[in-house]
Every structure is written in structure tokens, then in C-alpha cells.
Length: 345
Image (cartoon, rainbow, N blue to C red; front, top):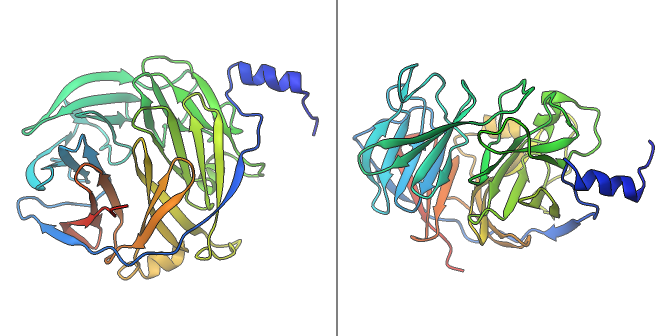
């Protein structure tokens, strides 16, 4: 492979593509598990949940849960008492309807909630109140030459969203594409894939990740499902840190089996909150009724502060630092919301 000189690298970095010239790899040591987190169960009988998907804290005022209900795929609860308020959202092609239900990748902005309508490649923003969701704006999020639906969409700032890259897109050596709503040209690409023979969706799946940004929009975190690592970028796509986690819970990977590590569920200005799996995919599927995930709290400097197992099988959660709570659900029991105390550290 021909090596580029330093002048060539500088020209690339100062141009359309954002990169970092410095290798920031750092080995961090995972901490031991604390005692199990004990749940408090909130039952509700006014609403049924179907095929649960996302769970989102909206400005510490509302808990929003999405599911596959075509007549109300958004369920809204009042925080902190978890009073059920209403269901909203209809599948269809009329006003305020969605041709495809946006189950995942729900972003928030203050009291607003933002869906990506991949049917027409549009960000749809709504204000959440006690009685309904009120439409604020519909703005395109796409780029010229786009051939696939955007995935992993994360709001960083009002004028900056990021999405996964690499599935037959241009510049597919980069993991992310940065976009401005309403602008049909990418702002930049960033996050270089490791060298691999994989291409397209096979490469995306191998490096499947979840992303979140800090509340102030200054940093972006990426957590890799099948690789025990966490990357931190600034909002211009420069790599700040690449943390490789050394963990006795993680065995040597087997070539024919996928081992799942952790998924990033919530971020604030100070902390990152992960759900840990730490098991082979087929074993999770075989033992879903008994498989218990874990809760991890990290800071943005790569320090793991806390981790513990949930006392019941939990499959998704969000966090309210204001109320000191973890709000979670289990696909094994869709009539309850599980609430855990956020560790007092």
C-alpha cells in the first residue's frame, strides 16, 4: 500500500473529510460488578404495549415509549410519578401520520421529540405536552446520491446530525457521515473503519454500534456491540479517544459466533450509560427468560464508574439524573415499567 506523506494527510484533514493524525488507542480496565440493582415495578392497566422498541426521557418531564401499535405507537407517561397520559401516532399517509412507524432512533431537544421518517427522509419534530404531540417542523435529512436509508441517526446540535456510513456509500472507509438538516451535501465523513475484507452491510453489521452525543453537543460517543471498545469524537469528527476495554467477563471471540458487549443507551454532559450483555448471541436467544443484562456508568474520559446486574431481565432503559432513576422495560413483561435507583456516587 502506498503511504501518504504528512503534507497529503494534512490536506485531507483540512478538506472535506475530518480525521485525526494521532493514534489515541488506550487500554482501560473494567471494574467489578457491584451488588444487583433492585427494581420497583410500576404497573399500568390503561394501555397495552406491543413489541417495545425505544424508551426516552424527554426533558425530565415525560417518559416516552415506542411500540408497534399502528393506532398509537408513542406512549407518554408523566415524570416522576409515571402517570400514563396518552398514546399518539398513527400509521398511514395522512397529516401527522407515518407510512413507516419510527420505532427507534428517537432524538430529543428540550421538550421536543424528533423522529426520522425514513419513508420520505425527513426529520419530524414535535413538542411533547400533557395532552398531545404538536408538530413543529419537517426538515429533509438526506444527501445527493444517497442509496440507502440512514441508520444510527444522532442529533449532535440543531445544525448537525450524524448517521452510520459504509453500506455502499461514497467514502465507505469512514464509519460516520455528518449532515445538516435541509442541506443536500454531507458536511464531512469521520471515524475510519479498521482494515477489512468486508464491504457494505456486512461491514456495518460487523462494526454495529450505538451513538450518543453530550447534552451540550460538544462530544460524540460510539459503542461497538461486537468489539469491546468505545470511541469519543468532538463535534467536528476528530477522534479524541479510542478506549479498548480489558474485561475478564469477555472471553476470546469465536470466529463463527458473535459475542455482544454493550450498547449505549443514554448520555449527558458528564456521563455515558450502557447496557451490558457480555454473552454470545445464540446463548442470549436460547436463555432469554433468564438472561440478565447489566447497567454501566462511565465518564467521558473513559473511566468506568459503576456497573451492576439488573435483578430482572431488562432489554432497554433510559436515565433521569434529576430524579436519580433508571426507567426500563423487559420484553418478557410488557405490562410493567421497571424503575431502579441511580447509584449515588
